[in-house]
Image 1 (cartoon, rainbow, N blue to C red):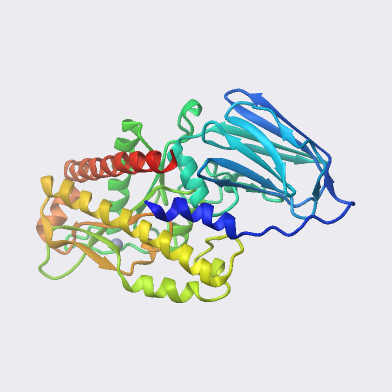
Image 2: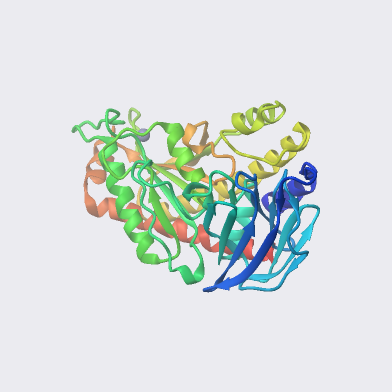
Length: 399
Ligand SMILES: [Zn+2]
């Protein structure tokens, strides 16, 4: 469990902030007050000041940095909501937390910055810290960088019901029905289109998971439209998904049964090579590690990937176990391949082939809603099993 949690602290230790510029730009006041079950931090600072808020663990804290603006606000802030205290040091405001907190809302207007915090789960906070990117920052203080929110309208098939605010957001599971639109996927001997089968199965699974109340669910597409592979991964990453499950149906002469794929080893060599280059952030698909030397980035990325890979493998094992109860399996059920949709470096990901549309028996079964419901129930059990252990491990690691 060292990987992603240690990553955040390590990354912060390496991320030297530029020294504040003398005089002209400065944070001149700061207040912290309770707001509902959260807290509201209000800062007076010149319009256009750059700032960012990052999370760190051991102990849990939030750090607001204003590179380029000196800190002339109070040296400390009293307790409010989940915040134990605020301490100004080295031009930053450090908020020590009593309880894990996430950003609920950010408002920037004419010399005033308001950041509202709300309680979140230990696991949710650990993920925010491990993601290595700001919870919020200047100029982008809306929706997409706030973890639990999502950009309105821009994304195909977005559907993320809010969990009760009191408990903070539940972990997000992204379901990815393959293909769609002009790409029908595999076409069965009776003309069954993969894109329709997998969407129906994803919708069934979403219903089950939401009824379970243990996670939020979002679909990369919720209708018959084409979504590029890279967009599916980005969809999950932008929302800081906990788990990514892609649904497909396969085609191969004579073969039948369900199977599950995780990313093959070759991808790690690729990641290593990528990490040694300078522009890691872009090349790793938008993953933003703090500004650290390339060799440190390589270590951070490899730690993160190792943990992600372990999470993916654990999920694949559960899928095999649960599906095996109910449906025929392909021999060597857990396989590895370099599917693009499995390449998020920080999100455990699996691709489930629910059966072979090229096999008449599998095709007939997959056409039946009751069979798809059976597959969905098995996947639902696997996901719940995976989440249960992820939650425990994270609570322990964060505590
Ligand atoms: Zn497919």
